Amino acid sequence: MSKGSLHDSDSCLRTETTPADLNSVDSPGEQLRGSRQEPKISSGHDFNVLTMTLRDWAEGPFQLNERRLQLSNTTATSQALNTIEFEIFKITEMARRWIVENGLSPYKLALTTGTSPSQVHRIMEPDWTPSLKLARRIASSLPDDWVSMFERDCNACLPRIFHLHPSPYNSPDPVTRLLGTLNGSDTTQVVDSLVKDRWSVRHHVYLSRAETEIFVADHTASDLIKTDYTPPLPRMVWTADANGPQAPNCALLLHRIPLKIGTKLKLFTVHIAEYTGKNWATQFWRIEGSRDLTSHRQMDILKAFLAEKT
Image (tube, rainbow, N blue to C red; front, side):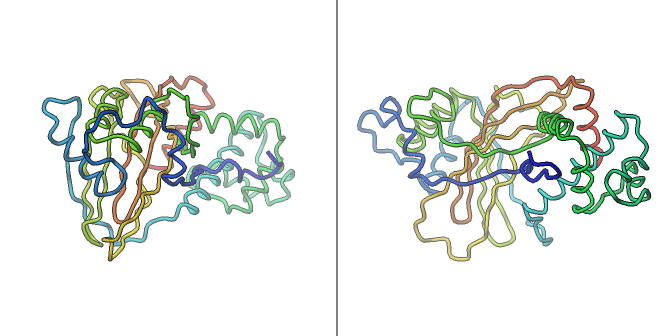
């Protein structure tokens, strides 16, 4: 990492792939078997077929619910703004941790950064947020090795979203199996894959510019079923005329998020396959694993982050 810049540690790194990119994950064992002619899951309409199949699943391993939301009139916060706010939080917390852990006074840090002591003193105030320019100037004054170590702690405990690339042909992981099934199987095989690998489903549909329908099928064997976890909202854009054919785009994401289970905070890793089209989006998600957060510094960073968000 270059000194004085945390730009490469953005909180959200997302790119999209197209169905053509995903065809490479199909393997012979996952392609359509037999002569069944049920719809394939390859468009927004066929995702509706999948949700209807899940609704009809008698005594199946899913908790189903459906609701409609009235969209807020407020303007949605851009992803770029979220990234900047996340970066400012990390650099501000970095300066606080540096002062506390090294027994320094804010005055000494001000001399190092070439800014006024009053500005640095305000960093220790919980509700104060510096400008991005000041935050980066502070970060540039700290040792590279210490900043890198702090970055690793932030990456380990703070909620983050990463873009994933499709797995190789022969990869046996559940993400590859799901993608192969979605691109080459009928709804029965897709549901079988969801059951086997414990995938949950969120299906978002814009009913109008002001109303959204959300269908949810949570796998009952998921460790997150008893929590308030919801995948990050998909990037949906209202389209007045959504009738024409359109191949869905797919983004593969890895969501690391800390959740409180009982009396412990655990870090969960969630795989998300997100399909988006005109006025709709479908998310498939499953848990990879979890671990306790035991590092005192990581716990302090996480508590500061949660306190700021609330």
